[in-house]
Length: 304
Image 1 (cartoon, rainbow, N blue to C red):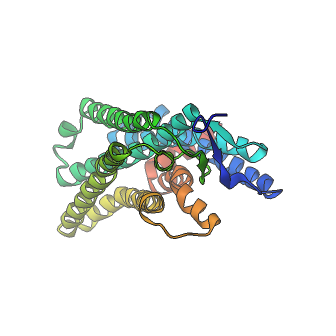
Image 2 (tube, rainbow, N blue to C red):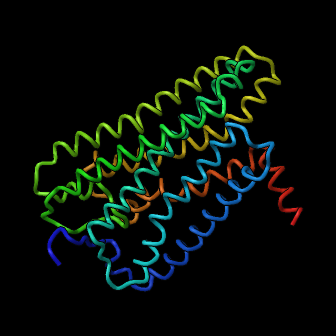
């Protein structure tokens, strides 16, 4: 194998029999992610009363979770049972593309959800004229296209690099880790990575923060009933947002900022949080906290 043609996942070395325990845990988590997200998506899809912008965006989160984890869990489970942990450069780039386009999509979908709640609470009478199906479709298409194009461009820039190393100290392919293995000039890659970070993480989080501050100000001036309805729909979004934001900040900090040596187990947990916790937490939070979804899930279960 030529240097740079294949990469080696070094963290799978010397796991011994522990790999079977990790395999069982990973398999259970993956099945749970698919089940819960499919349940949310099918409930929203088949229940016409849930064909509203807020619920459409929740179903988009579920689709995105299945999309992102499909690039991670099957490969992880295969590596846990395998004695060789190599991956071709092309497949590695594809995995990195899917995982990080999932992360970009997740953050921008959360931004659209914050915008939807802001309009619903600040302009309730004009809401249906502002957030129309056409507007929502356009926003979702722009979100999807931008995430795919920006992350895809970063992957193509990495593909052109000459690699002088092939050891990845991760359990999945990470674009920036591949860039660090290159002996070529990586200024363009670093600038592009910083640009993607600003446009898919910093700007959406800033807009989300602004939206919820405005919502809180509006709620303070409103009736108790209005506050109750606003908090009922906003609290699940805030929980999901905080969880994903912490996960992304942990991943970015570990890969780009921090140079200190962390225990391997702790490093793996921090780097995988955004791929494991949000996909399983999102549907559970929405199923238990939004009455319309919970009621229709129970109805769907009872009908069977």
